[in-house]
Image 1 (cartoon, rainbow, N blue to C red):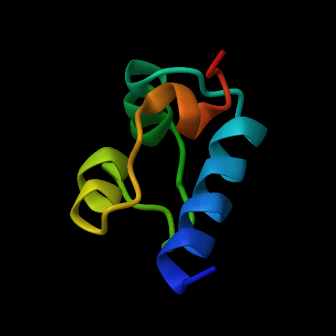
Image 2: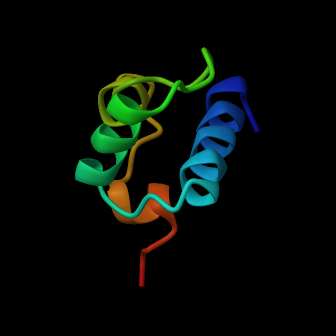
Length: 64
């Protein structure tokens, strides 16, 4: 597993721990809370650029 994959897993786990299930919830959470510096404000853009993005459902653990 490379460093991008590890960071994706870490941020994804953070999102799940925060109870986030959608992009809208992610944006609202970021506006209302101080997030750690290692958490990208726009994970879709950040991880898409790195080739690690497969969608919000996978990111939040809501994929069926």
